[in-house]
Length: 98
Image (cartoon, rainbow, N blue to C red; front, side):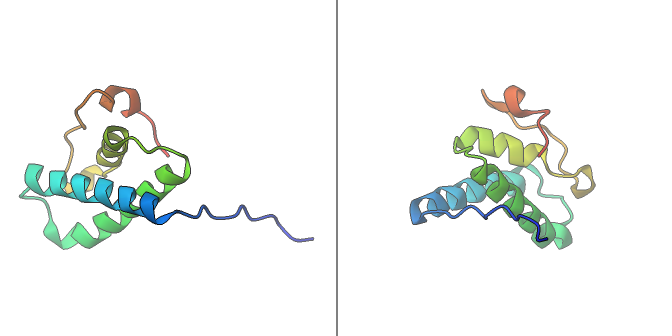
């Protein structure tokens, strides 16, 4: 007996561009809001944010503000980034963990 593996989501080039823009905007926020963060952990944090972004994209979440709020709120406190996301969608998505 084999086990069923759910097929991975595939993205169009337009979707990939949207996700890249969302990542770039979130990363710019992280850099500007937290200049004293531990920069040695940046690559680890970027990888974590990208994985989360693709998970959210695979779930069909495409709204830039919702993506930004979810990504910013998913950052572990150990990175020194603890301020919750702001915006009209932030409260809606604040406590949602994926």
